[in-house]
Length: 212
Image 1 (cartoon, one colour):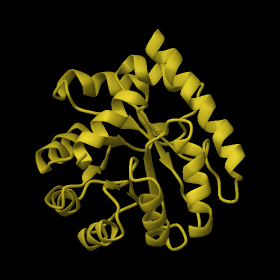
Image 2 (cartoon, rainbow, N blue to C red; image 1 turned 60 degrees about the vertical axis):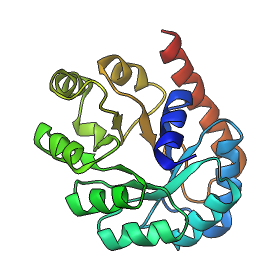
Image 3 (cartoon, rainbow, N blue to C red; image 1 turned 90 degrees about the vertical axis):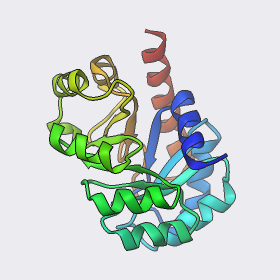
């Protein structure tokens, strides 16, 4: 399955991106296993983690059914390095057209970070598969509702930053397509069983939103 099809399937099943900032290569497979065992299939390793390419390579190899890649991708060269490591997902805190275009050229899914309509439309024009709304602490549900009024209806919007099981419903009601989950899911040094417990809580919140 190509990256775009895998992304679409994952978004339809459980639209949550696991952000494993600070994870080490030795932790990568056990933590990713805890996530995939509960149904998570979107996993990013931020590039400011220890030896991130090693972690991406190990997770990609161990869990080929997951869409695995990197976060905090700032340059086109980094996109190529992630691709070489087996990653198929590129997430950024900002919008850089060359980063998006390089990811698209390599058949990867790219989710650049945006805050404004100008950035959002530019990212879509560059070929972004979805938009990371970051930091979500500064992008309230009301802002998402306003963006929804002007963006193409099919645009995927993923708030990231400060997302917890308690605030997901408000964002979803405003038009969020899913979420990126960081420290509320994984903190450096967390055991696999702890991550699994957190993952299940987010799944329950996601399920209650869908039922509603």
